[in-house]
Image (tube, rainbow, N blue to C red; front, side, top):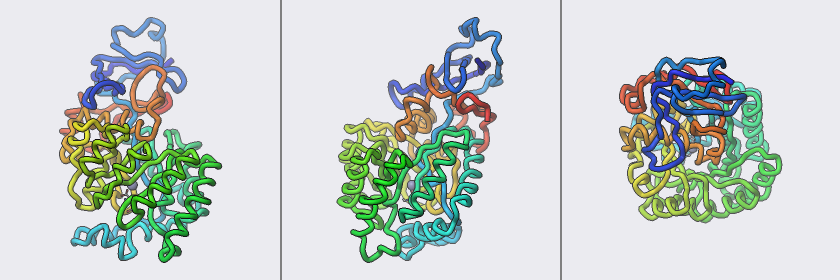
Length: 403
Ligand SMILES: N=CN[C@@H](CCC(=O)O)C(=O)O
Ligand SMILES: [Zn+2]
C-alpha cells in the first residue's frame, strides 16, 4: 500500500459546505491500495500498518485531487489559426460562423481524417494535458455531424479510455451545428440525430452524455428540447452549450430537462440562475473561450451566490479555445470570474466531477475514491493562482499510478 507523505497542504475538496470550503489538512499523508484511496489524514496520525510501505514524498508542497477538465472537444482534424487573426482584427465569432468558417471548417477537416489520425493527435494532447495534473477529461464529438463520422470520433474516445492512463468520459454532440448537406433542410438533420445517431450511440454505449449548442447560429430552444428529451429517453444525460453569445433561455432549458451541466453562460438571465440552482444543474465556466472570442467574462460570483455549483473547464477546441491549459482557465476565473482560488479549485475538481456525474469516484481525496492526485509546487491555492507560472505540477498519480 503506497503512501504519499510530507504534504504541507492537502486540499481534499470534499463535496460538503460552501464552494470556498476545500476541507484542507496540513502536514498530511494519503495511503492507497491498487487504484483506490484507503486512508487520508494528518501524517502524525498515519496508522502503523502503513509505516513500512513504499513512501513517496511531496516535499512539503500542496497536494490536490487530480484536476477534472469537464468540457473539451479533444478530437478534431486541422486547426484554425486564420480565424484567430480575423477575430483579433475585429470580426466576431458569430460572423465567422455565419460566413461558413468556424465549426464547419473543422467538420470538413475531421471528416477527412482517419480514426487512427484522430487517435494519434488526441492522444498527444492527453500527454500534455496530464502534465498539468489533470487526471479526468470529458471529450465531445461534434465535428463529424454524420452517423459515420460521429461514431468515428466517439470510437477514438473509446480507444483512449482503454489505452490512456487518464479517466475519459465521452459526450455525443451531433447537435453542434447543422452540417452543409442539410443547410436547407434542418428538420431532416434533427430527425437523423433523433432517429439514428442517438439510438446508435446509446446502444453501442459510446457516450454517457448528449450535448447541444443552443444558440442563434445553431439550435433554438424548441429544437434543443426535442433533441435532449430524445437523448434522455435513450439513457444519455443532457448537457448544454447555453447562453454563450445570446441570452436565449438555455439555462432555463437545462434546468427543465435536468441536465448535468449548462456550460458557457456568459449571457445567462436572472431566471436562468434561479432555475439552475433549484434543479441542481452545475454551471461550467469556460473563460478561455470568452477570452479568445473577446466576449464579456461570466460573473461566476453571481452564480455561486445564487446557489449554483460552478465548475471550471478549458473548452479545448480548434476555434474558440485552442489551448488546454486548465490552470490558466482557473486563474482567469479568479481574475475575471471573481471566484477565490479555493472556490476555483473546487470548480476544477469536485464540481467538475459533478458536471460529468463522476463525483462518486473522482474529484476529491477521500477514502474509497480513485487514487488521483497532483503535487503542486505552491504552498496553497492562493499562492498558486497568484504567482501563476503555467507548469507547476511536479508529479501526478492516477488510479494509484505515478504518471
Ligand atoms: N460553442 C460551441 N462550440 C465550441 C466551439 C467550437 C468551435 O469553435 O470549433 C465551444 O464550446 O466554444
Ligand atoms: Zn464547447
